[in-house]
Image (cartoon, rainbow, N blue to C red; front, side):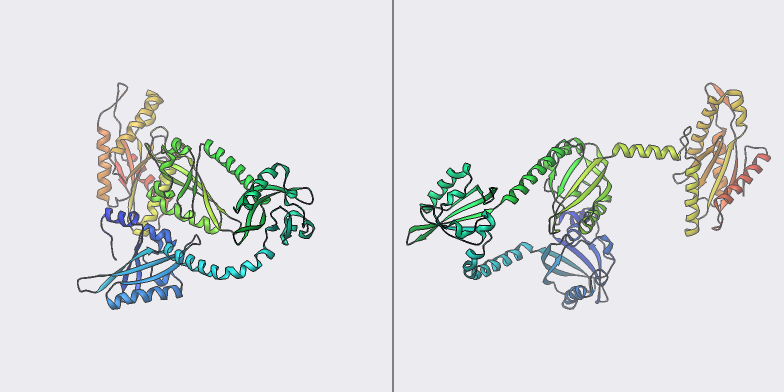
Amino acid sequence: MFEIKGDLLNSVLMEGIKESVFIVKVINDLEFVYVYMNRAAMEKTGLTRNVIGQSIQDVYTAERADFLIEQYKKVVISLESVTYEDSNTSLLGEMYYSEITLSPLFDESNKCTHIVALVHDVTEKKWGEFELKSYWDSLLESKQRYRSLYEFNEDAIFSINRNGEIIKGNAAVQDVTGYDANSLIDSNFISLVAVEHINTTMDSFNRAVEGKNQHINIAITNKSGNRVEVIAKFTPTIVNGDVVGIYWILKDVTEQLMILKMYQESEQRFRIIAENSQDLITMLDEKGKIIYVSPSYKTVLGFNKEEYLGKYFFHNIHLEHKDQLWESVLLSIKSEKSWKLQVLNKHKTKGWIWCELSGTPVFDSKSQFIHMVCVTRDIHLQKEYEMKLKHIAFHDSLTNLPNRRLFKEKLTHTLSELRKNKKGFSVIIMDIDHFKSINDEMGHDIGDEVLVEFSKRVSKCLQDDEMVSRLGGDEFTVLLPNRQSENDVAAMAEEIRRTMDKPWNIHDHEFKITTSMGIAIVSDKYTTESSILKTADIALYEAKRAGRNTYRIK
């Protein structure tokens, strides 16, 4: 398997190179398996690290795979770099055009073992070529279109003379004004204009008579007496250098202005909410780049909003959450559904803090993706509280040791590992000899101190993967995942005994504390949790019968 060595090199390839980079392994000169792709490659193609280890045939459709394999085979045969052009559609629905250079890598015997694909984005260049061709095509058609422009134009077009009298109108006049065009012939165009716009309209008309194009926003009054908002254009008709008439074109924008007003009101409400919200509000474009951030970024994350604009949304997300976040965004756009995720977000001074992200994709009337609106909420205190609650649920309140519930979960997990890996383990059940006498004679406060000190002494005897827990009262258990020989377990029991033999002094009271231990060595994968504890209990009983301050192994 081809490996990228060095954290710095891997970081440069993954995050620093903006062009897409793929590396495939060549198997028997016929099969090509992906072994690496950088961040840019994943963003452009929508692929994830899940394709690493898969062949081209596994990742693409048969037709697509055949095309790619043909290019890679050229490299294997020629042992030289090959360049070709390609195109693909991203998960966001955009068409990308690329120039791909395939370069062979050789082993010591000069055999091609891997191929590096460097993908150069030529989308903008291609779009420029397409637009140029489209321009010339449009120019060739313009003469034919001009012939029908007047008759079939959706805008109302009036022909008026230098005195402002209407000579002719197209069919759309009736749609915009409510009047049949013929009924307006010989009337003055200014009679249609709303009173407050008459002076402005006449000024524009007079400039058009002087040969200057004019463009103004006014309102007219239609046949029903209703107000119609229009864009009015005055275009002089010039023959042999003289203005012989005017085209007056009216475009009804009543609905558009209404929508614009609603949008502006909506945008204003959004900004009021965003700028006063304690949550972070972020808008992303189709490439995942940030196009808007709310002022609350400074309060919540310590960064100025300008430090985020233009950057990818996940640039300040912890590495272990980046892929999951990107996949959530892509799936949300594809399924047109909202998403929610808890991640570690970088705070400018506090380091990583827990945040809850939720995003909603926004589409236009044609179901084309416009942007993603994301709300980020600081849940660091909530997470800490949840962790405290979890700790309380799984730990003894007096000794802070794992409790019976956590011990049983660990025991079940260790037994499961035994069934998979055949690695035996041991369990010790122990209690404090004559602990009831200490409680009765010295009181429960002293008894509690003895329990706390006892738990500390046992804990110091254990390695990192070993666990002591308090089941209740003076009963404790020790789980030893990697001790399966009698000698190892006996050594542990002796170490605990020696620890207990050290002087005990609690509140000026000296004690002689000993413990009895029952030990079960587990190597049978068919055993159960209850049978393990029963075996250890029997061994503990035998240790007590032997005079206490000792142990027995079963």
